Length: 423
Image 1 (tube, rainbow, N blue to C red):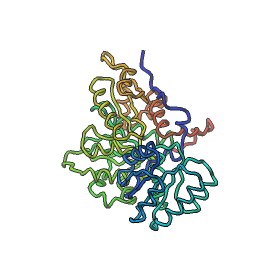
Image 2 (tube, rainbow, N blue to C red):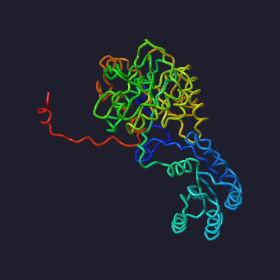
Image 3 (cartoon, rainbow, N blue to C red):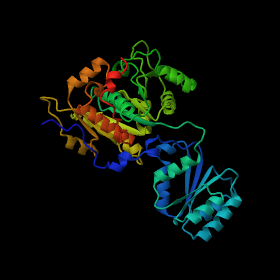
Image 4 (cartoon, rainbow, N blue to C red):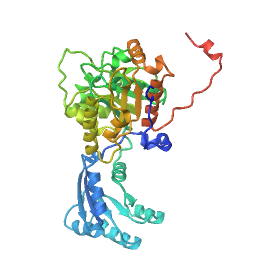
């Protein structure tokens, strides 16, 4: 019997899918600041160390000390205070306020203070804020809560929003990662009705232009060769519209030049593109370098596309292990098993494949060369060719899962309305 069109992850709940707002936006990084943390409990010290090692804290310099508020007051008697002082206290509210007054006497102007306490008391919180404390956090506390609290303190209200970055990478060549990335971006814009940008980073062989039936004069290579000049106006010129809410930053897909682009240029461009739409989909080539590693580790959502064979399993495991080690505070990558059920081909069972990686596949797509081939040759998406197909249904499900929202309800129209559409 044919495999299922998609498999819901065991850890995903209906609430996860519906969670919108901040959960659907891109993560921002902590700027280049110095942070001193004064902890009382070893568990808090370990948690702050874990936060400091996170990818979003890479630019900050963090020093963790013991001793709590008393140690902070003693230290700053003889030296200047850093950008941010984080202090843990297990004392009563009265003692805490007394120690904070002492800390205020030795703090330099501009230093922000975050207090980690035990009491979840709104009156205490208001008093701390009144005294100039930037934030009050209560236990239990995790690394991500600390990172987001610090990020919020240094967020620039005038800065543009940061879109959520979703990166598709193939475990090996030919698994259909690019095709799925393009169809996913289309589903995000059409089904989820969210402005989306697809960025084709396979410079010599990218197929996004073909899949969307576009042949733009400018594209991602123009951005990568002049990243310092890339502003919203220039970016808009380089993109081509593929729909009301979908824009494409296409690859040149020619062999007329050698593409020697630095990792810093890729990082700068991909970060700037995140300000162009709520969702940015990166189509990563099946190659390896410093820039691909940075994108894999720095992206908000990583989708690994594989086929059920041994080479895909080995490569997917290498990618997943690398990312898990570098992103201990993030959810694991999402796994998509594609082209399942090729006639006559021995395959690793879906359950065994997922167990080997320690990941339940988010999506399992059956082998359907006629549908995908027709869509590719027509310069269309799968949902345009066969909107009720299992493949279209599965890709829409993946878009819903990653966007953390449900598709807007389709407005019902009169049966006669179609007769009056403009030709």
